[in-house]
Length: 288
Image (tube, rainbow, N blue to C red):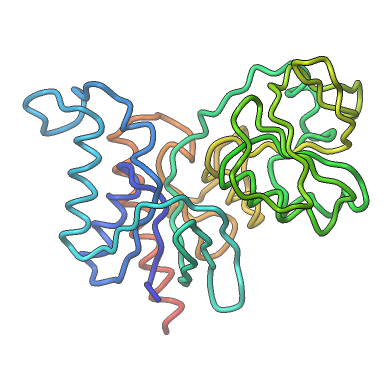
C-alpha cells in the first residue's frame, strides 16, 4: 500500500508527487490523461522556459520526473473514491488501491452540456453523485446521462435501489457490456422536462422518457465528484481547502484548478507542492 495516492497527471499532481518522493514517501500517481494541459498548444508564461513548449510535452516531462524519483505511475480511468476504516479506497479501470492519504489534482471540470432545463433542475431531480443521492430515489425510475465507464459505474450504484434505471448515451453508441437490468437509450437528449421537479428526459425522436432523477456522468469523474462523495466542501464547483490544501475530510487534500482561483500552470505547481507538505504533516502526525 502506498503512503499516498495522487490523482491527476497534470502540473499540480506531478508537483505533489515530486515533493513527496523527495521526502522518501511511496507515491501512486494515477490518471487517465494529462488533462487540460494536454490541449494547450503553446506554453510561454511558465518560469524557466527559454522557448515555448507544448502542453502535452510539459506534462509528459513532469510525469517522467516524478517517475524518475520513484513514483509509481498508472495511466487509467479513476471510477470511484471512498473512505473506509484505515484509509481511502480508490477504484479504477485497472484495479483497486488503498492509502491513508489522497491528493485530488484532476483539474477543474470543463464538461458542459447546453441542455434546456438542466441548470434549472439541478437539485430538483438532477444530481451529480449516485452514491450521495441514490437513497432519495428508492423504488423510483431514474436515468444516468453518459456512455463511458464512469456512467456505468454510477448506474451500478442505482440499480439495487431504483425501480428502473435508464442509461441515456446522448447519441453515443451503447456500451458493449451492460447489466441486463439497465435500459439503454442512444437517441440524443434534447431537453429535460419538469417545472419545479424533473419529470422526464426528452429525446430527439420526440419521445419523453419519464424519470424522477437524472444523474450526470459525462466523461470521467473529476475531483469535485470525488470530493462530494466523501462529504468534502465544494462551493461554486471548486473544492474548499484550508491553508495546507486539506479539505474538510481528514487526509484528503486538493490542489490545482479543482480548487478554483487562477487557472495557470504556475499556480497548480505551487499548490501541488503545498498539498504535498500538508500531506506529509498529516502522515507524520498519524504515525506518531
